[in-house]
Length: 437
Image 1: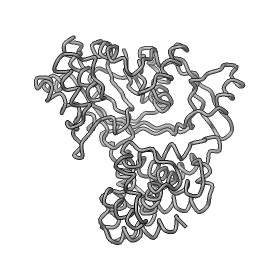
Image 2: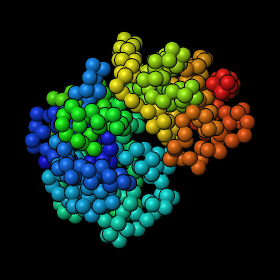
Image 3: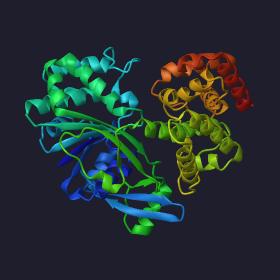
Image 4: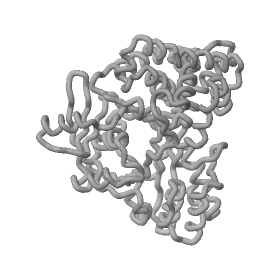
């Protein structure tokens, strides 16, 4: 059986590909992976027959694993090949890491039918030119048309993007587009297509030159496609696999009925603290997570944020406390060189789901969530050119938020993020002034 994965990034190769490699039925499964906008990794992987080194950076030293679960790689532009896979009955799962913005959603969470790329995809799918689609929703729906026409049977979508309820997110845009291009496709989807939701976790920074050199020196093999990651790995999955799946649970994956608490725990505690450090710690000239968490003041800021998040998480305190302790151990791993500038990307999409919900809930309860408000203050300074450089999919929208006086910036940022409480706005301004000083 086969899995097709869209998004041949480092995280996928340290996570889903690793789980598949270590599953007891790995010999029955292979992954065909498509790169994103660039073809560099795809070309490297093809030259190496899909093999690469996974460097697990343990505090006491590196561990090297050779991963062979990726059977073939293709450039993302080869949509014709993707359509062939969709039409193959042996393909049971379409997984993806394309980022939230790649799903081309509107403010309500549905498909953005005003998007130029979506409009173009609608026309080419209606015309039967399936290989000419460009957007991720277009590729998914064109693929389903190809699969239906080939009578290839059931299939499951398995998004692994770091957003809450990612299965429902993917399902909504797919169904929206399917209804537009061919209303009869909706009934076929009901009968043949499953959707799973996942919570994914493994910190995977870009492999540095130091890591690549260590691979060559310690294994005797030069591997420009090597991936560096941490020892910790977690995968929680909920959903309907219509055509089977690998035995990922034997590799440690959890299959649950309700994924929401697990999503929030990871999204708020890990990702939320990452965002806080990415903006606040870079103002203090810290470059990595390790450097940031090693600073007592920044460590205190992280704890303040976790205190806010913990009060809003629908989980037992002892479970959250244990997870916080584990996170500190992960952040304090000196071998991990996770760059804060990388984490700072796309704050316009991350803060509304990582920080704002707990902040607003705490203010509504009459509390003062300083830990959350500091993250918003730091992002405001980020948009004003302080700390990490701006790299945001909505840069055209968010850069103007940083213009004007600091007070004006705070007002615009709060309007953008939906933070209406006057006390929160006043606190964010004060915290921004402190950080700026």
